[in-house]
Image (cartoon, rainbow, N blue to C red; front, side):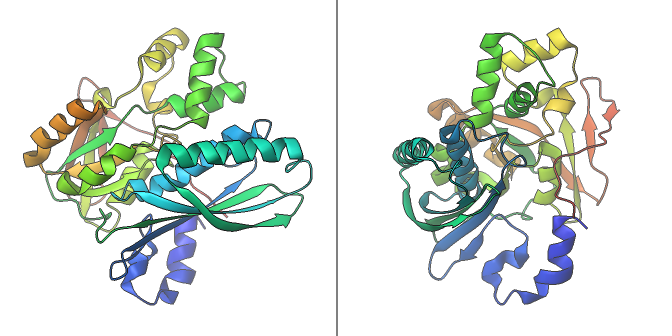
Length: 318
């Protein structure tokens, strides 16, 4: 079974109130107490490449954790960090780097560490709880037929960085540094939180892959999506690399770890979105449309031909 089948079969019946959002959203949302909370676990060799640069790993996992709250239109305020590892993982040298990294992230995103736990173990893991406060969030499964589909930033740079770290893709030093930095330092669109409520009908962050997360965004609705591959934004660095290596764009934008915001919005909101994008210098790109009918989603190339993917994104299978 995959993670979602396990939730639906074993744990969904245990939910006690609507704040759990049917265990089908990024967060727990207690509207009465204005509490928004998310929990993420990170395991060595699965969620991060290695621990040679602990400051980079902490940066990546903190940003990816708060991304769950940011994509709901909520500013994160506190993080709680639980960690397991041994004396090699948490040497004095590494602890200083971890401290400096957390301090820097707190400054960038105006968040504060609220607590946590540490456990001695041969396996290195982290679990981060992120908390924010708001009387409203942008949910999943609230899209409307004919809504436009938008994504922030560029996709694929992080996956490219992972490929370089794994030695499955080689390039020059300049490009290697650029892509590896994107892997460890995802761009979290914190400026968008206050405005997202004004135009988004539904939203999610891209953690498992564009198409996998788009399916999760509408998974309880009898809707499908149409995405134009040509419109999916990628960086100039990636454009040039794909040309040089003769690689397919679709294989680099559907592997996750981007932590950009994927959202739907009415066509009437297009001007507001474009103005916000221009004023705040945040790239926001329309990539497709929501339409009626289940299991009819399509990905089109620049000539209107349908493309097919064997792997739509990352999925935990047990």
